[in-house]
Image (cartoon, rainbow, N blue to C red; front, top):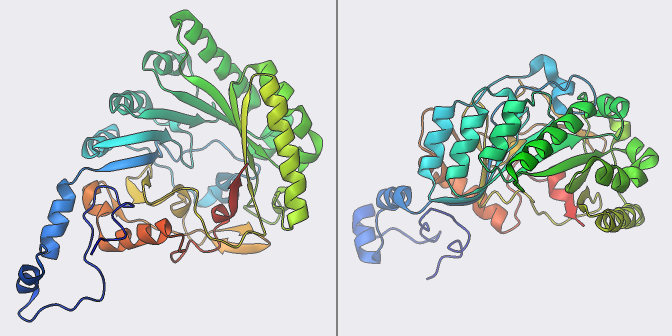
Length: 381
């Protein structure tokens, strides 16, 4: 019997089908009769099987400067946990992987706040993976610019939420000037070294106030300041009732279509100016569960070394803590599958409950804690 999980799992042997009775005499005799290895042998074999991931999310640091606005740190800064991922722990992690397509340094803080971020990026590039860095540029220096170009990091994505310094600080609690200065530094170093890397992009969080006041200015702004690619993400959740008014979640088909048409027009206008623009928005009327983070072939490593299926299942805040979505307070899920400080990654990945979790996602069946997550309502335009 062919296992339905075979095409989904990465670096793990397929467990035996459910419901089959064990032969009299115990596990070893049953395995001999069925021609299958005992479960312990399966797990040991899984530990040495090729370990391949599509995406690896690394939270190099959970430290953040965002003190105001809609960010989760701003809403929960009194209970925030600051950590920096040690270089030795990251190096050991990548040695366990046979291959990984994308390593993305992104989490709940600024990766550049970690003093060991530059050697981490160099280690990541040596894996042959595409390496991406997401930052608000608050800690960006000339040393960062030189190293990013020297090591051939594939893309740097700057995060903004406004097209003016005042609007960006009010919404994100970070500086737009810092982003523009960092992008200029990168372009200068690239020109000196005659390099095309890293590509310079921006992730623009579109709020309700931004949609009304500055959305149509976005293509011209991106072209003028020299960004080559942009991702538009609508603010879909709030950290408090005070920031909920600025969320933008279409809840009817008509509202979704109005926002979608406008974003398609923005993409066309940006393309005419030589800027690639993609958009994701939450469809509040969507009923079919589908997680865009593909935890069947991806994972998130937090700054304290904890392994979770995705970033949203391990926000570094002391519970109880919650966010608001669709007018409801929803507790942050806390889903830690193990720690790299005590357990090899392969052992964490091949733990039976984690295998079952990934299988449920691969079949679009919401596991406990995932049903109702705002990210399951995301659609890509």
